[in-house]
Image (spheres, protein in one colour):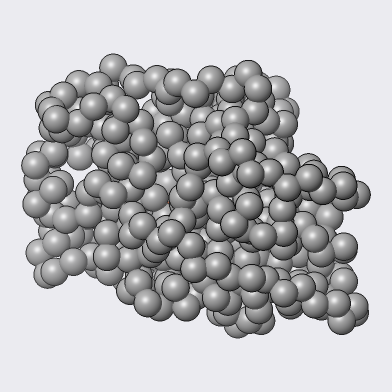
Length: 452
Ligand code: SF4
């Protein structure tokens, strides 16, 4: 292992407190014209080494339109519920974050809540924080509790039902955390949780134990741990692939994000960087021309977008994805299979075809992780296999992701194929991981292997 060490300067930048009562923020998108001229490095375009100069790179790429659309449904929602808010404010990602909906009374102002939804608040706040951008809320049906986007983000009483198989940290990430916020599970790649904040909170989140939970001072402390993470990566020359997730890294300001990416890109043995984000679906106005230009500087940077349902593919999301693709960033999509939301082949086919039209390659379809209170979301594993079977041959291979279980207890991702034998024991599915180790997934389905 190389003992090389990279020092990450953590700048106390302009934290604007866009997340109410939580994380500070340094989102300066404005071009300053203050651009440092450095010779090109081997794989990455030059970026300044000091974050104070970074905004000099945050100008738009030529050809990227600065204007942003607003779909008809969102327009109606805005004029009804936010009559004083201009289209310009609405399309400002900072305004969207600052005005997130996270209280019961806000929900009641916007939606006719079902008894199941009201149940979620009956004994106080739900454990997993709730937050919706006004934009994402505008895509939901205010009168229909079965609306797919609404079901993924508005809590229901079922969240309070915890079954014995469910775990706070189902993937065993805490056991493989080598320094705060850095999970080293596979030899050649690591997961860096850059922030604990997301634009919105998915009710089935694997990291529900940590996202959006810390008060401001602790989150500022967490940000300091980037230095330790970068030092660990720099000190282990087996690591060639860094996944930056969270929380959602695209909720960071351009300046902070740019500094983190730059420091990682400077490590000689790091070949690729990957960002996992749901922002293009829930806060598409965050994908500004300046952000696209910043990301385009990193030539081996991949963006994996968390998508759930074709209803997310709005004109706004279309522009956001187009900006990323036009900036030359390879785009993939990850989807969690969710009962009653997207667990049928037609819905997923619509989603995958839509993503491909936007130059996003469906990458993983995940079996839902058994976090506490997730039983109402989880489907039997056979459901995912049936869906893949219904897609194969009926659409192009490009539109078919790998169906995987992220096995509990550090098993890693295990792909599942229609027709493969499924071994079960006491209600658990027995799976063999990449190391040949047997892992158990609490499928809750007993009996013989299905015909899939
Ligand atoms: S965006 Fe990702 S990290 Fe954030 S709540 Fe959703 S699943 Fe969890």
